[in-house]
Length: 183
Image (tube, rainbow, N blue to C red):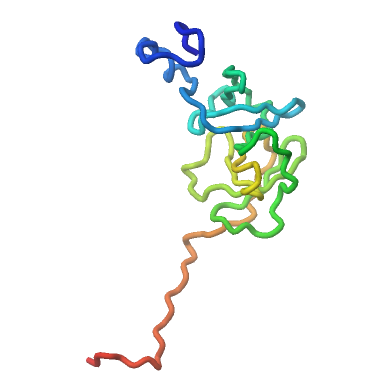
């Protein structure tokens, strides 16, 4: 929040004075999220996808324009959604082996809920504060789901899908085919 302007937005002169992007609060928020919490009502709002994970918790801009930090201990899941009013997904586990590349994982939350997802194969994309997965129904309202480490009691890798280590062998040339140019 800009101290000189008294609102969330500020001019470029204000940022030159040392407020704005350097104070740990995201300068812009662009993705819709629903934060499901333990023992509380869910929160809807907006996050900046690269900077929403702060040391103290998840940074959220509410629809009313207030920036809040939700502690990781309260957060069950952060769902990147298409619409705020959609219902909870009915399927939380894969019925069959997923087709998309990545690590197929099963996560158990503190309250006993079990959820499947697909993690990236690239370990450099793992977050310090938790795991971002693609849910079993990626074309439903939930596009991606972040689960903080504080909300999890167990994470199991069920399979590796689309590993680059197993390459298909090239087909051998057919013996009955004639050569055009003989040596």
